[in-house]
Length: 443
Image (cartoon, rainbow, N blue to C red; front, top):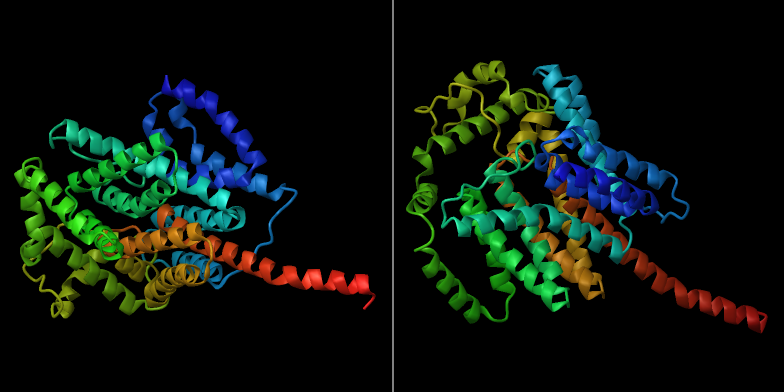
């Protein structure tokens, strides 16, 4: 039944993309996060919805008659250089070329997605539709998982959609933390009472899903989000009372094994999972030292041969964390956006990646400081939280090349561009009026 429904509705969506390319950008992130193929089991499961949406969106923009003027920002230049760096590192890879070029292919699609967003999301309406697409993908799925967790009395095991970018519970928890501020923004800007109530429930269920994911990084990310809202709130005492009530109630709802897992945060030095990550960070660092400019190529750290080659040298970095008593039988993923980029693209590639994050954040800060539009200021603040959550939660996850994070970067570019366009229009308007008056006077 699902297959028939999606096949019937999809041509209609394609039609609207051809009419309005910004709808294509919105459906692009929706299909990437919601992963419709994961919900289908019949003949429609073989259809590459995301690819079709991407191609139609690009085609629609090319043939669009009235295009907005596009400004090439420093952020977009850096993203382009990042693509170039990843391409060069793939040619010079130390790993298996077939694996590296497969990852490069995914990387290129994300970079193209960023640029499509920057040239199609040009107005407040475009931005809102794009935000709704994110909410109706990741947040919708998170709300469903949160509801299952409550109904099952804490016995439901949360997991992402099989085959998607968020199939791992830790990655799902990070995505939900990133989306949570955007969900709050939409909630605060919604006037319809019924819709507002539904969004409020969605916020609560997503928080439950993050907690129920058993992800230590997810809980830390949630603390970052909660801490921001607490510091900015004018009703701190009310929030403390509410948080205390929820926490006391949760102790009878959350299973003991959840608290046991969270307690391991204080015992990282003896936790095999943590020691495995430290070993992966050491390996990425050693690879970057040997290949400082372009790194070793995408996912080179997960190459068993390279892992065994660098493993005898891990003790050189034991002054950070001693892993001499830990030995992994196989290569481990970097489990860090920073160390993965470091191993993949070297110190230069990591610098480019960090600059992309920094400039995105600074653009949002300028919007907060200079914009007169409340919706832009509010959204910029929420995007800043999302970026901070990505930076903190991503420190323990392998998601540097992530559709959702590049959505944040693209929105930073678009918000700043909208603000500057409006300011330039307001500045130029009096000048045009004076010129007309002078023409009338014959000056």
